[in-house]
Length: 640
Figure 1: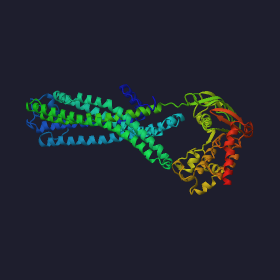
Figure 2: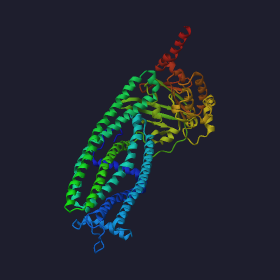
Figure 3: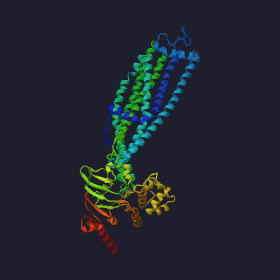
Figure 4: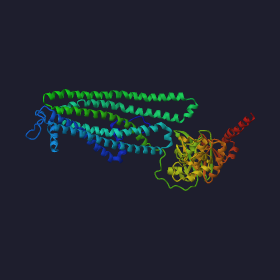
């Protein structure tokens, strides 16, 4: 199942499968859930007891027969002797309980005793509800914490290709609103459904015990409610799914354009992006509006059917009471029970709404967790080789999509301590080399070896630990300077961090920041210039003593003075390390041992800078266009 699928499971089998998957997350908290279930049953029993006490009070003390007269057997004379036996049951059991407990059972004191029992049942039900609610809410929070942790951990294992084809806003929606929908399922949906089912079952049993005729009348509207719920179910799931999809589109638009707000303002694109946002927001509104129709029909119809059942009880119950075939207490109890019966039935429909929304969210979360990384860990990782500082590509071909090859039949090798430069036009496949070497993607053909071991047999974490990468675009994070250099690695102390910063000529940066390593950086490294962020990335790369260095035009964002300082630092830091330099500016390749020239995914030339110039091939063309042309332009400006 794809995370991006718009098809929700509609069958009961799919719903049960998703519920079983959700229950796996609750398995560590089964004792809490069992305790909550016991409280649900106890609370439902207390809620069922109230109307029975009301019926007993009416038949014992407010009915038409003698109030305090007791038959020879020690039982009260009311309710009326001609009523059905079940009608007398509640009153007789309450009278016996009062007598056995030593409480007043006759006259006004007896009525007071029943009233006190009724109040105690209400108080006990309230206490049980408080404990039950706290238990359920805490359990829901624990489950959601575990699920969020698992989702985030899984996201960090997915390959780059998945992130390239999945909008960031959609991923954020999964971890926020979708998980929150499941929180409602655990805290409101399933437990409330259980509570309502227990309460309804208890009420059904009591109603049939009291009077089967009134029970059938009360339940005569239930088939209509079932049909109404079925209609709501068939339409609500699709609406919930569309709402989530539209919300993800809105979130994606916000994330992209707020992150690039400078570009939006510089290009005066506020009106265009505003129109696009209003369109997405209107689509989200329209889907919600379609859902409102089903709510607008469903809930009023539930209320109408509830009132219809109540009216039937009043009419027929009143007739049977006046003819003496039904006691007044039983009718009063029925009216209370039916009110309590229809309320949980309506709640079941509302909680079913929550369940449907949660299932629509859970299928996407389930699909996300079931998404396997395209680059998997080796089933049997090989022993990690020693630091030899070598890597090689052997007839490697790779395409991001279909047959559009990014690199084709690529073969070359890097010796220990060698500095390789890779040059070529945009789209020649330079960055693809880095992605393949770090195993962000796997080639369709050929193989890549690092220190003589094929990449597929390397443990991914250990492989990437051997490399340090400095990109042209630097990612800094909100937090301290220390966190941004160490990236949370516990084995790096402050001394090593400071030494790394000094090696990359970041001493002025440290002296400028008043709190040194404890200085706080804003989101995306705000508070630092582009050049300073690049220095931080250099220190981050070098502090771990890597075996290989990968530089992707790493000095492009710094000024000439800083670049010169970094180049001098690199001469020292590159000693004993193998380096791969992705060069867009050919001036940066002069210190490299060998230059690889890429064109349309193929390696067409390689050699030293002087050898390639003398050969007069593509490298010479690039050099003339970039370096010689730049000198001529500079000369023209100086003449002017």
